[in-house]
Each structure stands twice: as C-alpha cells, then as structure tokens.
Length: 122
Image 1 (cartoon, rainbow, N blue to C red):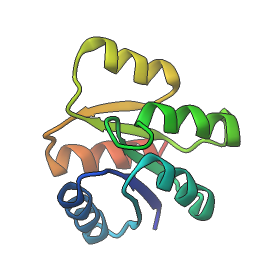
Image 2: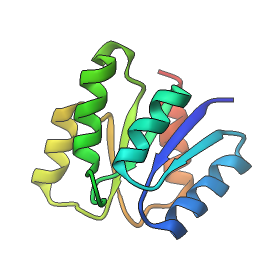
Image 3: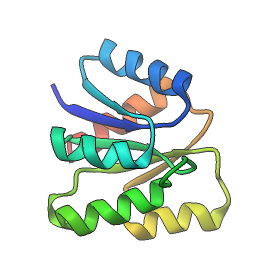
C-alpha cells in the first residue's frame, strides 16, 4: 500500500491521523516538525505528504520549498497542507508553492481519505 508521511507538531492530531490512515491500509511515517519531516522524507520516499503549516523549527511552507529544491518538482509526490490557517492569502501561497491541496482543520476523516485516494490515483 502507499506510503504517507505526516508532518504535524500536535501529538494528538498526528497520532489520530496515523491510526486512521493505518486502518485504511496505508504505511504511515510520522514527523513532529519540519526538520524531522525533511529527514523522514529522504529516508522513506513517500507517495504522498500531509503537512501542517504552523510548526516550530520550520514551517510547512519552508518544508515544501526545501523539498522541491532537494528533490525537484518532477520527483515530488502530492503534497497536501492541513492547517487551521485558512486566510485566502495562506491558501494561495501554499498552492503557488506547489501543494496539490489545502485542507482546513478541523477536517473529516472521510473527506481527507477521499482526497488522499484521489491524489494517489492521479
């Protein structure tokens, strides 16, 4: 099954998301901040990334920028931001950087699972 990297600093959200994804058969790797996310990405080569925007050490936007520089846009898996920052400028900035989707917190599990399946099948 597909490998998904979750980058989320909130332990409860990260653990809950991991449990949901594993129930649906995904192989999930976790990172608690942007720096750890970059390292985990290099080790696991995920098929899809779910990433928070507001995190300590390195925010999600910076993570996406660094991944694109390191791995190139052609080799980037779908990158989906999960964030409570829902101002239009934040969403547009995320999409302009190359994110394929922006999901507002709180989100529903069925909504997120459908979106993941859609992006993995592209």
